[in-house]
Figure 1 (cartoon, rainbow, N blue to C red):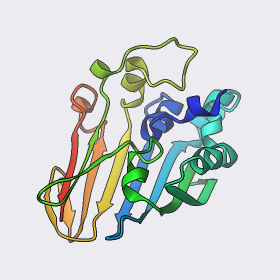
Figure 2 (cartoon, rainbow, N blue to C red):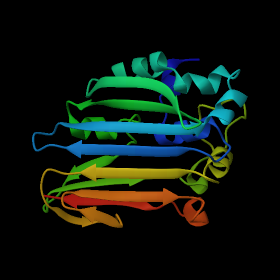
Figure 3 (cartoon, rainbow, N blue to C red):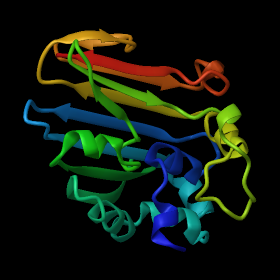
Amino acid sequence: MDRHALNAHILIALAALFCSGCVDLRQEIVLHEDNTGTFTVTGAIPAGVYRTHAQDSRWTQWLDPGTMGAICSEEPSIELETCRVFQRDGKYYLRLEGKMKDAKAALATTILGGFKVVTTAEGMEITLDLPGPEKTPDAPVMAPHKPTAKHIESLVAGMRLDLTIEVPNEVIATSAPFKRGKAVRWVFDANKDPAFLHTPPQIRLVAR
């Protein structure tokens, strides 16, 4: 498969990996004043689900450090330091850690989620528009690298997304329900909030 075809929104791609609704995604982003920063992305799936799909290379290559490392190496704004797969507590994990040499550009990449970063009169505004079914046209079943409405509907049945962003200065406004100092956090759990599918939550942060 063309590597560029794999380079889809990592949150959706990892989740669409196993459409059983058992995916736990955690993303931590730390921004510095000089437009650099660090990131950590961790995806976890039950070992049984992984084994069920082990013969389907279209999906399991997302849990291949070589493939993910190659994808990240194509982004000049990202310096990948760790890319590993491990098993613990009955789950398989993919963990990506690295530096953002150009944070604004790195956050806009599909690897880190496709965040939109703009400079406003108040400071810096970061937003992310999570795709819902109404914004995602269906694609042929044999094109699993393309997130579709049906893929999203199946994966969010039990998906949990934990996102933390830490800024170097004061947080002025945010849609995040949790805030501690310069860090804000969103936790989306489709098991607890079925509306996650039809009304994707707003991710917005304004900082100086």
